[in-house]
Amino acid sequence: MGGTVRWGVLATGGIAATFTGDLLAMEDPASEVVAVASRALPSARAFAERFGIERAYGSWAELVADDDVDVVYVATPHSAHREAAGLALEAGKHVLCEKAFTLNAREAGELVDLARERGLFLMEAMWTYCNPLIRRMTELVRDGAIGEIRTVQADFGFAGTFGAEHRLRDPALGGGALLDLGVYPVSFAHLLLGEPDRVQADALLSPEGVDLNTGMLLGWESGATALLGCSIVGDLPTVASVTGTGGRIDFPQRFFHPERFVLHRPGREPEEVITGPGPQGLTGMQFEAAEVTRALLAGEKESPLVPLEGSLAVMRTLDAVRDRIGVRYPADTL
Image (cartoon, rainbow, N blue to C red):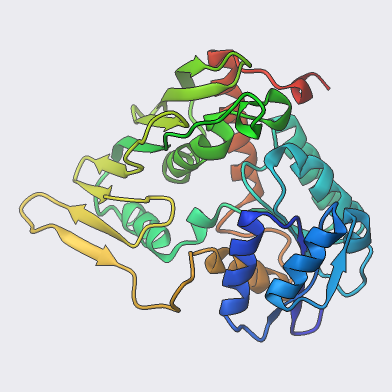
């Protein structure tokens, strides 16, 4: 690998474009994008032309066979994560895989086992964990700034009009609010408290059997609780709050890629923590790209910011939520 990490982008949808744009805008000499693949060659060629990428492939297999690719960014819908990431790992490539990591914990475990067996780097693309403000928040919590955590609240939702043919309504494609949006509040709670001891949930289901609106209550033996929500039929505020015995931290908007949070402590004025000025137009995905590059150049097989055991735990919680609300995917029975 030398001193440069060479990326291959697998899929050409909106999230692939956002990630690639952020990666290139970093202008980091330690990273370059050398290839892109789609199942439709014209789509790969158009993506390559848009971002100045040298090679475009009309199949995933061609991308993972490219000797110049060190790490593959899997940007497919989550229903294809097991297949795409597994293909890359089998070919000896390191992998950054979008979230939700897979459709279920079984698939996630298979990918983790494969990466460890092959001695390869694997990371879920939970960009929230790599965000500087989230990292600062976890430092404050760890240092006791708000005492012992008692409650976490977080939600993520928007109102959309999705026909029965849309992927968000298709169980075979992992449709519903939970894996697309609920993964963020669940991951936020896991970051602070780890895997819960108790999971309760209720949901409004579509005629196809996927969740449109889901509420979750997680509990820990410490007495801490998390009240979480996700929706594709309602514009939730998409905020988060962490309350401890000695204070509270509020994320007033977009907690999954925040620009600021407010620390409240008794007897003190509220303290606002904000991000410093950065490159214009970047969305925040550059932080996860930088973490992968750092880890690979350091010879690490997983990131301490997004550990694999944490991703597995989140998938187990998502599975438990689906069990409570009665959502099943065809892949669950394989």
